[in-house]
Length: 182
Ligand code: SF4
Image 1 (cartoon, rainbow, N blue to C red):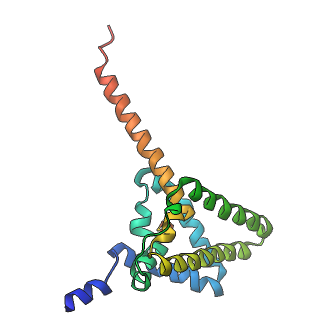
Image 2 (cartoon, rainbow, N blue to C red; image 1 turned 90 degrees about the horizontal axis):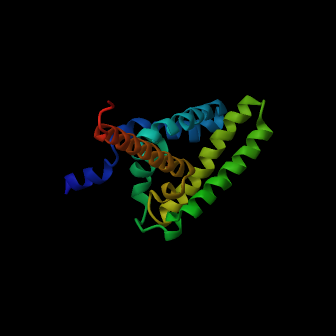
Image 3 (cartoon, protein in one colour; image 1 turned 135 degrees about the horizontal axis):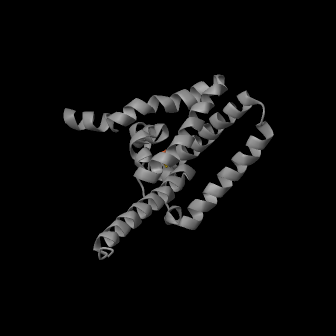
């Protein structure tokens, strides 16, 4: 019984317990100190490179919000399946385009006011996290991750990366099968 309770309380991977504090730092600390939003920018720049080689490794192991969803929101979620619509590529890319368009417009307006730009990243983190929490308490704790723009991007880059690796392996194999040049 005690072990069962411990298991429920101690959810999440060790790496998630390390990164979860970044979620609180940006989403809460950023409200008072908008420069913290640049931490989010650093993550957004690093994620694509990692995704090319490891697809959604970030999501399952390192994402601070993913850690919050797994460790905290899990306990408040009814664990229902999320709508099938969330699995549709067209819907996921529509969400991606919508959020990125709003972000680009606001970034254009804030450009040059660097603290405001930091605040914009904080704002984006807070608003999307509120949507994530809402979806989490209606469906399951990771429902947001099905439509998160960064998740969609990582998945596509991961496919591109694995496609390139397969193509390289196939090319190397084909080269080995070629008869030696006279
Ligand atoms: S899908 Fe988005 S919120 Fe979820 S773990 Fe990945 S990057 Fe984080």
